[in-house]
Amino acid sequence: MADRPLPRDGIALLAGYHSPQVDVPVRLNTNESPEPPPAAFAEAVARAVRDVAWNRYPDRAATGLRARIGALHGVGPEWVFAANGSNEVLQTLCLTYGGEGRTAVTFEPTYALHAHIARLTGTAVVEAERADDFTVDLVEAERVLGDAAPDITFLCSPNNPTGVVEAEATVRTVLERAPGIVVLDEAYGQFAPWSGLTLVADDVALVVTRTYSKTWSMAAARLGYLIGPPWLVAELDKVVLPYHLDALKQAAGIAALEHAAAMEERVARIVEERARLAAELAELPVDVWPSGANFVLLRPQALDGAAVWSGLLERGVLVRDCSSWPRLAGCLRVTVGTRAEDDAFLAALSEVLE
Ligand code: PMP
Image (cartoon, rainbow, N blue to C red):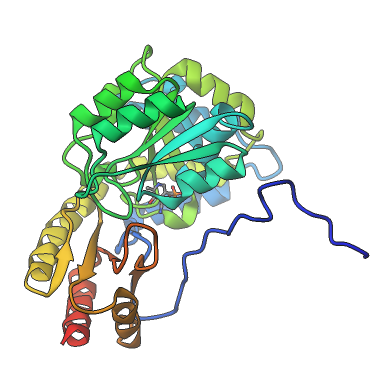
C-alpha cells in the first residue's frame, strides 16, 4: 500500500475519547452504581434470554420499552426515543440536528462527549465559559446564543464532571434564548433535587436525556433514552439505524422498570452516602464542589492533582484524573461508592495528603 487512505476531514486531527481502566480493588472512576441490580432483575433477564425469538429481528420501534419508559414519566411512547446508551441518543441528536454547516454550543467544563460527538458528526462546536462556581453564566449564555445561533445547545444537570446542578431559572432562560434545540443531559438526574422533565412540552424544543447506566445499575447493558416532543422524536426515528436496539436489551430495559422501588432505594442510599463523603472531604485539605450527582469533584489544595491520583492508585483506589483537563487544573472526580469503598478512598486520600 503506497499511502494509507485518510479518514474524512476533521477525523484525523481528532483525539479519541479515553477513560483509563485499571484493575484495582476500589474503582470509583466512571460513576457506575456500586451495587448490581436486584437478583429478581437478573432472573427476569435469564427468562428473557430463553424467550427471545432469536431468528427474528427485534421490535424495530421498541414499542413495549418506549411505552414503559413513557409510563414512568407520565407520557406516551411517542415522547420517548431509546438507544444504546445515552451516548447514542446524543449521537442521533447530532446526526439529526447537527452536521455540516451547523453549530452546537457547550458550556465548559462539561461532559466531553457533547463536543466530541458533535465534532464527529461534522457539527461546529462553540465552547462557552461557565461562571467561577461552574454554573451556567446567563450573561455569557445570552452572548453566545446570540452570536453563534446554535442548532443544538447542550446543558448538563447535574453537570459532569463538576456535579453542579443548574437552577431551573437558568434552564428556562436558555430555552427562551436558544434558537435551535436544547439538550438537557440528565444522566445523573435522579440524584438531583429537581429535573427538567417538567419543562418538556410539545411547543418547546427541549429534550431531556437519561440513562440506565447509573441509577438502574445497568452500565453493562448500554441503554439510554430521551423524553421530548413527538415531532422531534419522529425525526430521530428516521436517522437511527433500523433494529438498533436488540431484543434482549429491550427486554432487560422493561424488566428493570419492574424494580423501580429497589432503584429508588439505591438512589437514596447514594445521596446519603454522598453527603457523608462530602462531609468527610470537608475535613481534609481539598476544595470540594457541591454535588447533585453520584460523584464529587475535588481539588487537593497543596499537592498536584496528578500526583494525588497516582498515590491513590498505588493504594488500590482508582478515581478520575481531571487534573490536566482545561479549566479543571488539579481536580479529581470520585464516584460515590459503597460505604466500604468510600472509606478506603478517604483513608488512602488522607495518607497521600499527609
Ligand atoms: N451523559 C453524561 C453527562 C455522562 O456522564 C454519561 C456517562 N459517563 C453519559 C451521558 C453516557 O452514558 P451512557 O452512554 O452510559 O448512557
